[in-house]
Image (cartoon, rainbow over all chains, first blue to last red; front, side, top):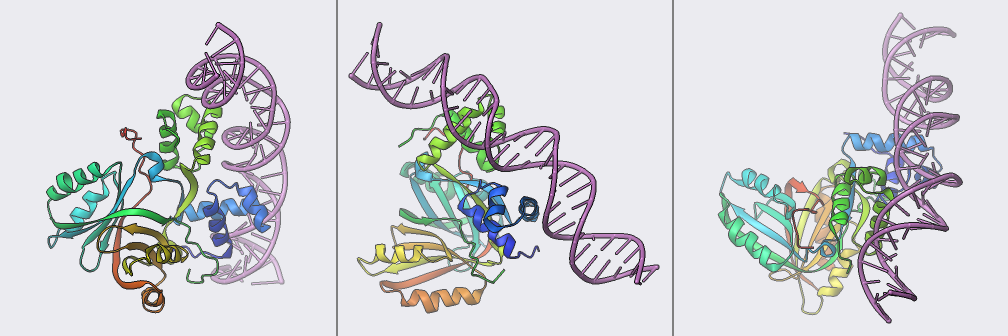
Length: 155
Length: 155
DNA sequence: AATTGCGGTTTCGAAATTCGCAAAAAATTA
DNA sequence: TAATTTTTTGCGAATTTCGAAACCGCAATT
């Protein structure tokens, strides 16, 4: 596991503010060479520390309905069900959980109709699912992936 | 609200595979001019359709504990509590929900200790919070932001 | 003490990309 | 239809990326 130093974290912090910020600009920002920035970025990407993506605003592309869904599975079916759900394009997050729900997912839909379709026509028929609880989101307060904090020393 | 056409969606789809893909390459990919790609990207960014970010792998930066937390608030306190939670660096997602929990959040911690600290020392003292349910994540199956699907026509 | 190896850094052109801008084309509005 | 606005195109100029060689510090070896 790659150990990240101050320079790596600074680069991550800079890039999370703007994923397209040029190497040269990051270098200038911290008084280091462009080559160093490039070397660190490549190394971090190779070890899977981060990747360059775009964060699309769901409602701006017509996905107006968001839900978190808790799923109770039959014993021994968790892994199979989780992997199947991960293949759905509507689903952006799938995790295995401790407690009431073996699986929780987060998913986006264009409309309530499509959410109902998903739960009643699709989920209800997936082999291994025993029950589902749908938590319907009414309002977004925060949806960010900027969790690099230079003050933290847990890395 | 900006209406997105085929060209916009293609650009989004291309960028979501690689957020640093050059304009020129996207242009080549679809047989359009570099200027057009640039124009569309700038326009979409200005209207908040997406932004360039990096997606950091939480466990690779030392955040080994992830949880979804359902929060029951006193009547009239939802907004205040949600905004306060949105300011916490540990919290990547905050939404208002229908049903059992007024608020649900998703948060990352370096260790179980820090999660306990967060729930028992912080959350329990936030004015307006009546109860919390912590769903502790055991395993990640999917955590992606690639939800542009050209087949979809809901935009 | 000198040598080797290795990971990390610096440096520097060449190649590629981005950027600004003016002109052309297309779409919208009057 | 003319006028206006929006979008696209096509260019150099400026900037950035990229590859590779040289360099450096350091620890292990000879």
